[in-house]
Image (cartoon, rainbow, N blue to C red; front, side, top):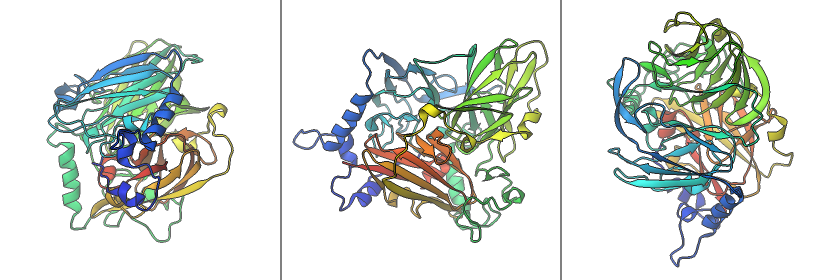
Length: 510
């Protein structure tokens, strides 16, 4: 993610007395008094604390490692000796205390994606903390308020596109159960150690488009397209451009990856998930990719989607689901007898990740297997409806903000409201307000838009999410309750779009 600076906060805060400034979120004033911003953050954290909660301790050691992805050996950066990194598990209401020992040759950070945590633990250097220097350490400690499927990753440069990610499962103390087993399935697009690093990919994107020329629209700017209104797909499935086009998403990415992984393994050496016929299995899907949405299906099965970004939805059966970068979905599956491919097809790209589901005898599927479920019913997060008990209360809207998504491949530059992050005006909010955000995508690319520190509700369906796909030329409205004070990043979870500017700040007033 982008190296954040104070420029955007200072620029937006000029003349606005009482805006929560960067330095006041986690620091005291020069006379030793606790600032109003720090006090507000502490009060919000205290309200999350539960009597009798456990303190769960963990350690992460980001470092250089050599990994075997299934016959392909790569050198990368990771939190352990495999990818994904260590699975962290807590119960909602617990305090998570994580010691991070940075053994990388570079600064880093850890962002707790999707968690409505205290602002000074959000892991965004330059906004909520200083970077963790090479050889340095940092302790993250916060209450984990909501059950669900979450993950953690750096918010520094394009480090997410290495092996630096892991899953955080937050159990519900009132879990109704109804399943026999649980699998955590992490999807990823992989380039590091194959002859290029993510930093070199970013350099190539910038250099190859610096003088104009071809881009993801076959020479057309990804920016505003005259004659196409919000919500119109305009027949984009027929576009060719760089070839990364999807009938569901339009422009489907900027990077062709040599490998796509499921739980750290390539399709020709897949991980095996073992069960018994008739078992009900809860699968927690996490897309840790940087530039790729995945279309996911389990051959010979239908899935019932039960949760999106940690929050329950009205259960709905489907053949496949589309998972954008940063999104998480939980599904229930009743296992048949045999051997089945679990396929994560790179949407609009060439290649896929594969895992094997085995409940009986049979030969493992081929790496290029294409189960028919992939071409049947496909659900997106925006197709769902919220479960009744997680809907936001009805109330009037106090404040509205537009986030107009723009940019181009030539030059490689992505914006919100016409500005890259360093020059972006913060989105001013007041604690206790009901806030409406209107994502207006004026590009021919999809953007998975992520808001830190909150979940929002999609207008109409009420589905609770923190990351949502906004398709080309679409306008999508979401509501949130401003109940977590601080400075919060809002950005595209395509890491290369965020790093080149598609980011802003939700900025609480004191």
